[in-house]
Image (cartoon, rainbow, N blue to C red):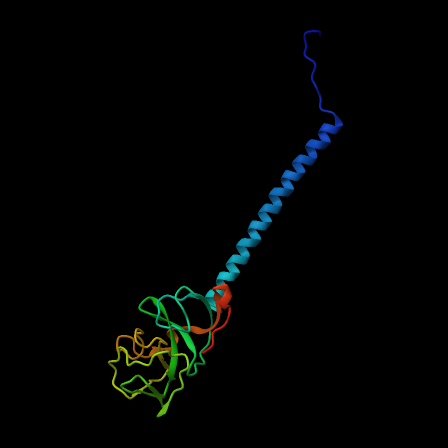
Length: 195
């Protein structure tokens, strides 16, 4: 019996500390899992809401300057009710473009040689345009906007390729993603997009 080694059994205090350590580890893992799961659910809901109801878009290009500048982030809201002056986002050739609504179904658009736009025979007040220009215009004027379509133009008329070109034409309402209503980036310019 003297040859047998003495077995050291843990004390009650050591057992209690080990139990607390295991409980803490288990609670930490559970809390971490719950946090990650919650973040995934919130991210999924955010993506669904942004895709279906309030898309977030990044402005690329200069066709909407000075109203919208390159790399700004904007929010759109789904809508089928378009009015002269609304800025809309729409699909064109696998891209998303941003332009201003000039006319809707049934309207007659005419553009003078100097770039002045007339809607149903009356000149449009366009405070958002810095420089009037005919731009790339190969449509037959005056132009009658077909049913379920919108006629759009960029604010930077010299460079914008829009409904004045037969390549783009008037936009079918089903291709319109929504109306631009809020700028969210850069921070110093957060607010509604107005003209």
